[in-house]
Length: 578
Image 1 (cartoon, rainbow, N blue to C red):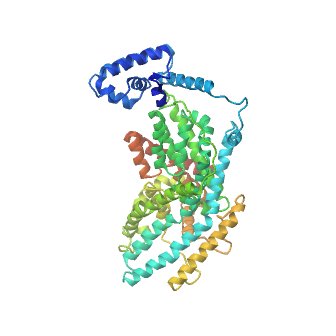
Image 2: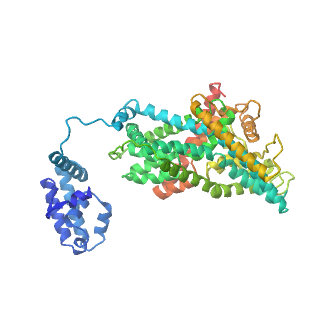
């Protein structure tokens, strides 16, 4: 729009506003022209229009110069007069007149056919943006995304798990043995701490790759803009608009950039309210927890359980948004929503790969930094004896400092059915990053898989085994693609037993819940879904909205997560479930 302000031909302005506006513009432009420090930098008429439209940056610059107070005083009077004259905000009135000018100009110089041709994008939009079909289509696409995420990636998940728990771990043990460090606490730190912790998270990289791949296809095709349009009516019930849904979409990948994405919203009120709702969108860091627990307790309906969690996050965000709209934000209105829908495009592999690579590499970098540090801290707490007869790095996990700290918080989670120190300890470290929940479980349960066959004796044999298993995983994935609907790759193989970690987690939940392990697991998943995503997200909220809103978000999310998890477990018991 700035180009229209300054548009001229032969020294004459092409765009003229109505007389009331032109009078105020002329008065302000004259004051600006009489101020050399402004007239040398800005065109007086252009600056006058920008000030009337409420440009805060330029207003601050005018306020900092000599004579600026006189201009701003005249500006305030002009704004009041124009609002009284038109009965609406000045910026909206001027924008309307500009669009009217553009429309009239186009009508004079452009000849259109009597009937506008219907493009392919228009035909598709008649369906995907339909008033009643739009939201079901959106939910169906999300279901497809998570079906691909959970089912297609499963063979590669097993391959990475075998790679880390097999050749990598054996190679590290062999190398430490060559350095005469075998059997020492250093070996325990590296193998049981770093490899078990970080490796337990890296196992889920194939799941995240498939998630980012599916979301990248939707984003590059142009559908995500339609999703914001479709959700506009629903977002209006929260006092927001469809544009606020875009940060929430980003939140399905990571809460941190989603919180920073609220900067695209014009009003601070919309930014804060959207930022309070973003953490309820289930970020990809929670996905490894969902996959692990679903594989243990819901092997025949893992995809449905995970999809339900994502929908639950959206529903809870809607409920909280409606509550906040009627309480803390009841005296403020959402800003208007104007959005241009881009045409549909065929996604390019280069663009999709950039999305997948950037987001997955960020996850891996986090695994080697934040998660590794947390894993080391957890290992030291596990290695430090508090009770019993063990010594450092040779103590039972139940006698460790970590068990003592986690055990002190366990009663808080008792109403949810998981008051074991293992589960509470995983949730405590989960505040650092949700990926750490899985790595903490891998460390605290301290289980070892029993190999069914001898490990390869040579480096070459290890490489052959890795390559063969990768080919097998690829073949299994290709076989599963045409059979996504109705197939279930969560189900354990008939001839095998559950991995040791899965068995240990299952026993822990069954014992702490009095035999209602599946119900306690469901409550655990709901709690993971709803409490603070991570420490970095909390820091981002503090940076964007202030420390008061940060603590409001942290405390509020914990309270909501606790109440919801209690409702799931206690309500399930009353209904005879679990």
